[in-house]
Image (cartoon, rainbow, N blue to C red; front, side, top):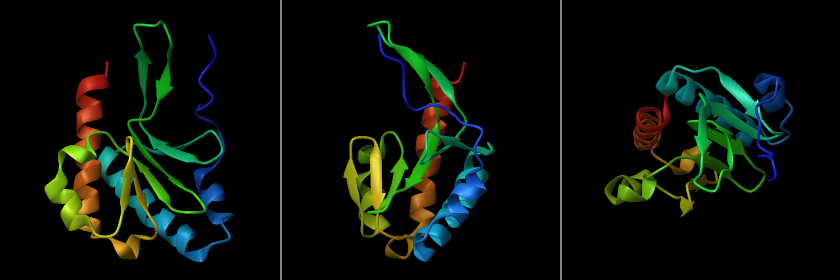
Length: 138
């Protein structure tokens, strides 16, 4: 069975963000960093080479595959900010108030934070984090 390629590293999240060439992506990442830290109470950890995660849990599927993943997080990708959250599609009223975004799987994609309502985004992040922390914290 293959191992999960997404693992926590000891690399600096701040260095990773500071090295971004795109000024908007860098400043948006600083804002998201503060939002996630406030909501989760966890320090940021760089997972792999581009995912910033907060908290972690261990999972094990019926197939026997198991690993670790973060409760909440984001990735400042070149095309958009990818915000990893569970259950966001169960809140269409909040998504309708969020602003310009796309969804896919358990991700929310935002081009830049100025396109969205940060209070609504924070609420969605908090809902997702609370769900993960309640259901997967052992």
